[in-house]
Image (cartoon, rainbow, N blue to C red):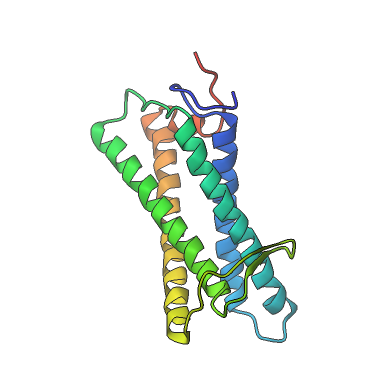
Length: 184
């Protein structure tokens, strides 16, 4: 039940999926909240530390997720899924990963722009790989913001598609991501 099977997802994939989803929503909300703060508010200084630390942990979790996908069998599509549905699902997953990695990399570049490493809760420091000039930091910030909105919109569409499968098509697409499947 920990590993994926051809019938569905195991507990590890399900946990990583939902932890990632909730973390992305939290980071998005925290990022928006931070941009509304004035310099003298306590969370103006606390928020970025939390945002950066959790963002770096999400990056590690996303790498673990990709490794887990490589070493586990991929669940077979449901027989009711058309070729177009399968292509659409694959395209959305690839696009979500591309957005997420771009978001995580730009966040890291913004954090380390002055050549100082990025810290995870003050316990671990990820060294800076390059310094960015002011124009590049601004560009990275713009990409980070636009891609954050894009990932939220695409994730909402992804969730809506899962609900469509559950309530309209009445198939087990959503259930497979909620309940671990025992291999046959």
